[in-house]
Image (tube, rainbow, N blue to C red):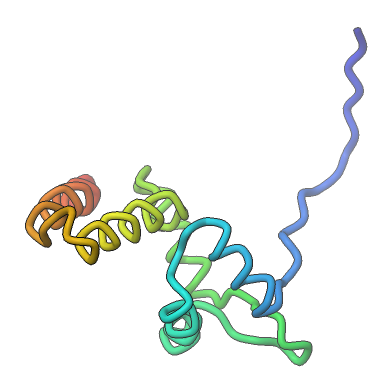
Length: 118
């Protein structure tokens, strides 16, 4: 067995188009056909990302700081799993399988726990 070390740098991911973002959101269970466009508008309105001349999304300094802040807290608020779980729970409320109170307590507990650590 051999070990080879090369000098180099990691490179950031390439910017993605709105179509690619929608595909990623769909694959990760984030949003519905009715809400995905609003999610995308919200990240731009809050200045977490902008579009470049080629209509590709670029994170802003604020967007990068938000993700880095979440990561430094050790809680994955910015990861798709959490959003997917919340979307699934909301769907269960819509289907009458759970009540709003059933899903809100665990969500509030998880997020409160995160912010209390800070």
